[in-house]
Image (tube, rainbow, N blue to C red):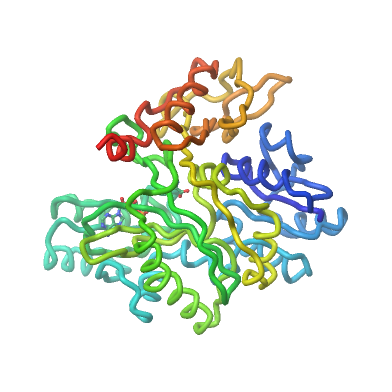
Length: 423
Ligand code: AMP
Ligand code: GLY
């Protein structure tokens, strides 16, 4: 099979690493890719926003299958355009990608199909949103409707904070993403992420993970795209996974199909496990970054036929086998992230992968033959172990061998699971 992978992050490096191990793979390209992905695939300098250019390249190389990593091209309809050109593609249509692209869309779907989630209202103007907040009281959650790079959500512990967040959205802090606002009930519980494939009809549960969104140790400081993750999530017991499938995923697949937007791709469900059970916080329509890195470490099966079956409506014919081991990833980021940081700082050394640990590249580039850090989140040191504690020790041992002066990481990724394992 000739495969083209779209994206350039740590998530895509992990996907590339796994796809490259497939005996079904003949030729492998990535656009635009990164220096880590270059170990597995030929990098192509395509502008991914130019769908005609992506299709022209795919035709020229007789690509059989395109895997889209990030959400932006999906929300922009790249998968639709590729499929219209006759190319099998992993990733949802533009219409189905609204599950991530519009929080209001997802909340309305939940309301229509009785999917458990926090009570909510949608607003197009500040004044009625403010009235609603005053009537409901705090704690309460304010969300910009559209894609805001993970920054459009305020969990307001006071009414004043909530009112300020509403003004921020309508004052344009998130551009058009904030032109509509969802105000949502605060859900109390433990968060977990659940990953599940769907070809529009059938579901194939993958695995669970927990991440660390805050930049600082002890889950302090501002939110980030994720400073680390581990899998599985202890709170997601087999019973809780079963309830999530029945109460959340299956009604979503059926509802999306019924509404004329069948969903094909991966559901990344952000869940709150409350006293009532699993409730949906949000959907993403692509693998998590860095959650994908730990999932790929744990996946025993060949990834390529699983993704291809998802794209071609044959998901009922495949299975996914997982290691019993835990996996954990530590994000090395540029000092200053998620605020301003220096670019093009040199990375002097990346240690070799072992059988049980590997460094994935995210925001790196080669400049005059030297490896440099170009992004906020730059490397993902990923390891597995019999326990999260063992995976954590292995990941930090490898992270400490990375030589990059401008980098930093949290030292406590996986702490909740480590505490549980000690108990
Ligand atoms: P989201 O971008 O929707 O994942 O929201 C970012 C984070 O805000 C989530 O990971 C939760 O920690 C928190 N959050 C979002 N919605 C709620 C809610 N209804 N109740 C409590 N916390 C929430
Ligand atoms: N790590 C969170 C995300 O990929 O959205």
